[in-house]
Image (cartoon, rainbow, N blue to C red; front, side, top):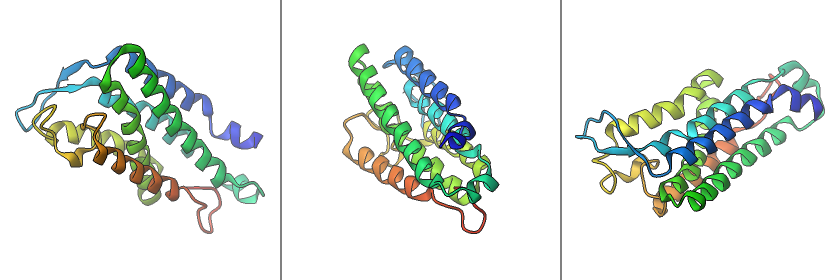
Amino acid sequence: MDLWLKTRRLPVLLAGLALYVCLALAAGDMLVSLPSLDGGAGRPLIVFAPLLVCAGLAYSLSSRMPGAEAAAGRPVARFDRWLVVAAGVAAIASAHLVALVVDAPNADTAGRNAAFLIGLMLCARRTAGDHAAALVPAAWVITMTLIGGGGPGRDRAWTVILMPADHVGAAVAAAVVFASGLMAVRVRPGRGGTQ
């Protein structure tokens, strides 16, 4: 466990979570004008906050020692899954707390979006590797802000991250994608370590 803790570089993940909370506190319900193909309206700044958690988690999971992990009798994949769950729960709980403290309903969406983007990153990590996985959440956020709809209240449900906090479909999609990503964290066959 000590080797796993040192190898995964948890301070980077914790820094990402701390910056996520700071951005959520600062952004609240603030809208920013972004380029858009649909005529564009203001987008919540909070939509970018989950990228900090995803980047920290991607870095933590990509820092590994395959030889030592393959030789160890420790359940490294289980440790990694618990790390993912802890990061997701921390992101959701802190977003909800921020929403209550600053009375900003958009801040509540950050937790749901973090779960969705973490799951997306983990699925991409399984299929495309560590380097591509770190870019997928950012690509999703940028693409959805460009083509996701006509602004608040007119966004398309498939964007997930642009939906309001009380949108049930977006919450279900986030839960399904997060669970899929969690299942994608498993032992690499024949190479040791986790993916």
